[in-house]
Image (cartoon, rainbow, N blue to C red; front, top):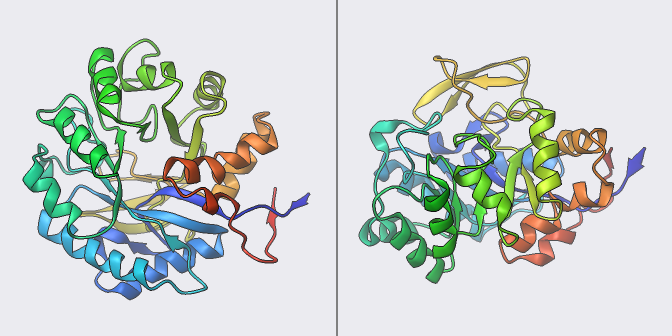
Length: 310
């Protein structure tokens, strides 16, 4: 059927349409990502930077800020920057280079916050300095998301008690046990937003259904999109390395899963196929992410006469 829907919002976009954000050289590179997302029905997004050298990250943040301040009509809006690191657990790094992981200090956080509009930071609550960082960032109006973490249940709850409001790609790069760790703590707390990737690769259908059963009004779908998204198979840049895409899976040379190549339209179709009610599935990529970031007006953003097929 054809159904007109609001524009999608994606809170985790590492790249799109052939451009890796951490490899961007100019503001035009950032705009290519924004245009590519707009063409797929995304009206707003958080450019997401994985762990990399501090100086390089700050350079990219300044380019993103330039684009955020001067949007074009054919581009998805840059909501603000999502720093997915470097404050992560070396035990659950995913594809984040361990050599660039850091422990948070107020001085270091200040360097990032002064480089651009940071709206979200993913960190592991168990690393030294994390709880103080969560409290500081929350006071500064930055949303803290727990992720890339090997935290115990108690450490995860401590992170949420300190002010963390959400969890980054639940079940990925964290303890997959239903009784312990960040995922279990997040699902047990009714105030915590649950971000997850629904692309048939990062999670099984059973994991998706279990998560929605536990958090039917709190789940938010992201793509964790990388440069390859929207381009098909091949080898593409991602941060300080390359990934290869085959049969819908993006992996680093060592086989580690490295982000998503799907679309939110595809995720919507997957949710509907799993029996998720249309309104709830749509809210997971429109009104819920808009509410989390404090921009409820983006949850009803229109793409004019464009129609999303579901």
